[in-house]
Length: 159
Ligand SMILES: NC(=O)c1ccc[n+]([C@@H]2O[C@H](COP(=O)([O-])OP(=O)(O)OC[C@H]3O[C@@H](n4cnc5c(N)ncnc54)[C@H](OP(=O)(O)O)[C@@H]3O)[C@@H](O)[C@H]2O)c1
Image (cartoon, rainbow, N blue to C red; front, side, top):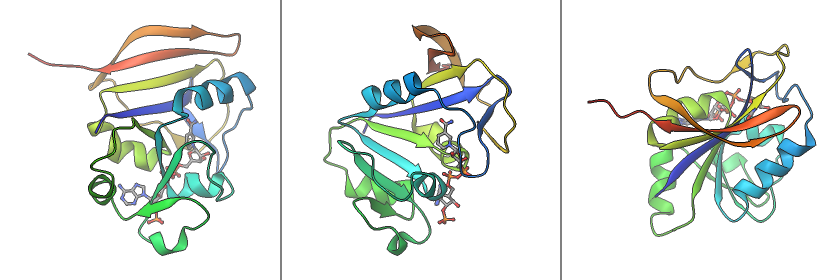
């Protein structure tokens, strides 16, 4: 399976505040929608809650949680990424890891690329993107907007 991650990260590393994203940039939501539509989006349970427990349309919605029985309403839930991978083994769609921080920590080792919206602000928050400076490098600016740039990070290969 091809795993990629997508995240919007502020200058101070913040990605969330409680269950919310502490900014509202409609162009970034549109970029997220364009990028992930048609794929499989995999999220942590808290991110699923932050969406109001409603699936995003035109994408397969997958939630990772220790209590999959609690997830209903059009999303599939699994106890681990390995369980998810077994269930979707024959699926050729791109797997988009969409957060939050806890899921990124587990899933980034499976990803070759991260599509990052670099938000040009430093809001208060209590959820931070993991440190990827040893494992990924910035390769290309994909899109530029007033409030954010979309940047492609690729896995570093040593040796
Ligand atoms: N800026 C962005 O791009 C972005 C993207 C997504 C989310 N966010 C923000 O990030 C915050 C949520 O992030 P978070 O780190 O608090 O929570 P999260 O990663 O969304 O969810 C954490 C929960 O997911 C489950 N989980 C995650 N990884 C797991 C694993 N490897 N194995 C089993 N279960 C796993 C566990 O659920 P159980 O407790 O049910 O077992 C865990 O408590 C919110 O503020 C949200 O708005 C920001």
